Length: 170
View 1 (cartoon, rainbow, N blue to C red):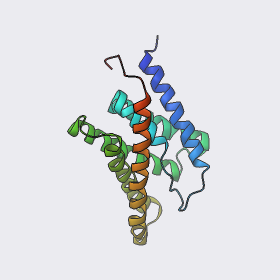
View 2 (cartoon, rainbow, N blue to C red):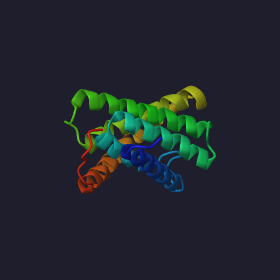
View 3 (cartoon, rainbow, N blue to C red):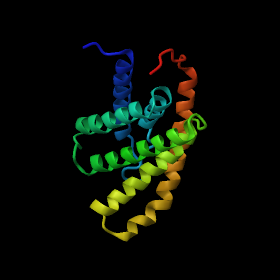
View 4 (spheres, one colour):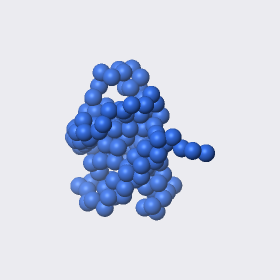
């Protein structure tokens, strides 16, 4: 079976997202688990070039592949990453289907980052930290999510501006 050009591109996007995910895992963070989400730049580029389904695949492959390589598969960090990824992709899908091309990368990235953080907080509270004091971290985490969303959106916009136009219909 021959793969289409888009399949090969998506495989490369997934490999890039996993690579960035692995690099980010080695960056010290101010709070446990708080990262800038640079692998989400790849998901944004894929969303805007190939659509929601492709972005969902790349995100899913990043979460699973990254966790397998980091040795966290099915552990708490995998569960939190999966919850955040699902929430972010759901937000991207909602925005993409409801706004069409009205939003740019930052307009997608900020709500997706907020959804990602909200899901992780909810899952952490439900499964791992049954203390209501966890919610006291929410303002700081949401502020960081907004900053990370703005940053990843700006980076994605810069990358998209430098990519050649797409010529296929997929």
